[in-house]
Amino acid sequence: MTTLSRARLVALPSLLLLASSVLAATPAGAGPGNAAGDAAGDDKGKGQTVRFETFNASLNRATAGALVADLSTRTNAQAATVAEVIQRTRPDVLLLNEFDYVPGNRAIDLFRDNYLEVGQGGARPIDYRYAFVAPSNTGAPSGFDLDNSGTVGGGNDAYGFGDFEGQYGMAVLSRYPIDVQAVRTFQQFRWADMPGALLPDDPATPAPRDWYSPAELGVVRLSSKSHWDVPVRIGRETVHFLTSHPTPPTFDGPEDRNGLRNHDEIRFWADYVAGGTGAGYIYDDRGQRGGLARGASFVVAGDQNADPLDGDSVAAAIDQLLDHPLVQDPAPTSAGGTEAAARQGGANLTHRGDPALDTADFNDRPAPGNLRADYVLPSRRGLTVRDAGVFWPVPSDPLSRLTGEFPFPSSDHRAVWVDLRVR
Image (cartoon, rainbow, N blue to C red; front, side):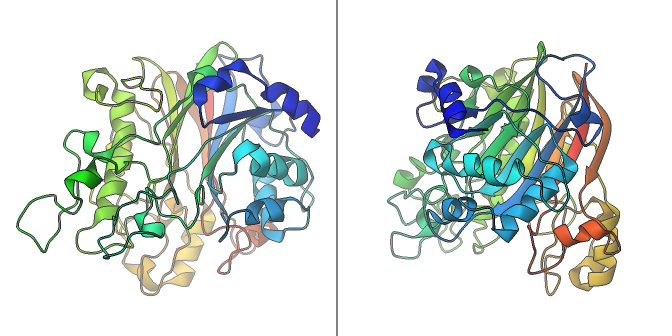
């Protein structure tokens, strides 16, 4: 695919409705690799099996511009390994977490051109005709001392932690059309506007929920990156791809501001998919209010940074989705997760959760150990789970070279996929 062909399709009037968002669409063929990918295309709807995947690919860099520099060649080892994971799992609709946001689609286009559309390690290339990227709260200065350190500036005082704007961003890739006119982003939604928000408390004062001053509460945003509702058209059907990456529930103090924020970032989707009056408080970046329409099909995806039984997240944070009456949990597993927990030991030995469900290989000594952090959660309506898995090969599998152990050749997270029949 060429930059010229991509530029022709980017010129859509609907982009004017998305202020700071960008849609990139490029003509390309789609290579098979699984039951979903073999039949992927734009012209099928009901009865079609589609693979949805989330992958925290750790394609973030320490400085602005570094990701573009790395992706401008075809020799970056990590990018090639990440691309091979994608080529091996072959999702039809993919969320990439920790992919630095770069305006003008430069980074995501380079990743497609130089890595995904080039076979890696013997895997077949894969083409994505459609991509969506938009700004992230990470690194965007708030102008306030949000961590109460006595000074203003730096990652902890940004709307979302980051050393530059867009660090740790997100990207959606799809082999099916994205309805860009209907995309909703919630980057600017204020945390204080969520009814019953778990706003943090300063333990040094008697007042409740006063970590942030009234002026700060007037600007502090809920989403540490952003929340996106990206409608994907599968034939005549539409599936809302609900993507986010809540903050890790750590790197704070006794006020637990990150743990509480993580909880409410997850709650946002629980309220959104429920819709009705309970979602009436929600507004998007265009000012449109309300949640998802009743009966709509959806897939919640992303690194939620919350395990249902282990780790540092607020109790029951992820249960807001796992136990939601409109959501089904495919509970994808891997043999590699079970093997890693037993071999690595440490914190894993005290975990209550099933290690087969783990999706992240974290520090075992002292903590938190491996966790289930990444999720693909489809709606009960309109979608039937056909298969699911976590890409975590056991060491005896030659493909374990793609996951490895610290320092990881790709990411400390594993790709999580679910095959869904659209009905």
